[in-house]
Length: 124
Image 1 (cartoon, rainbow, N blue to C red):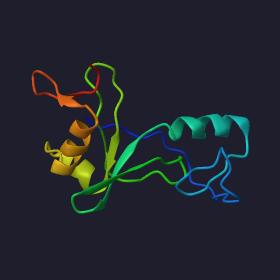
Image 2 (image 1 turned 45 degrees about the vertical axis):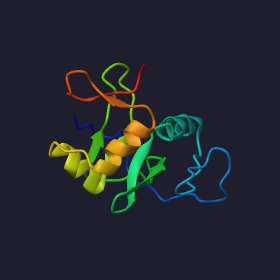
Image 3 (image 1 turned 90 degrees about the horizontal axis):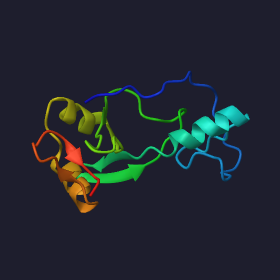
């Protein structure tokens, strides 16, 4: 299942300090209340990113720095929540195969294949 990420036009980054409302990845600090609420929502999304072949890290991105290109959402069949994949991991998932490192990361955090083996479930 692919999904588009809420896209916003890129603007110059504001990286004055990394305050409580700043993006932990790029340091972008929102300048308006609406942008702050949107950024807070964006930062709740978990991204699984390949740090090196076979090695994943969890990242959180604002709209300014979120990955562009291939994106794949792993959505729980029960609740709809789940992480997003990007880059080579997303391309593999779009082609129908999850990387062994993604499968390992999911199962390590309690995810399991759906009973019909069509998707994943995080809920118990």
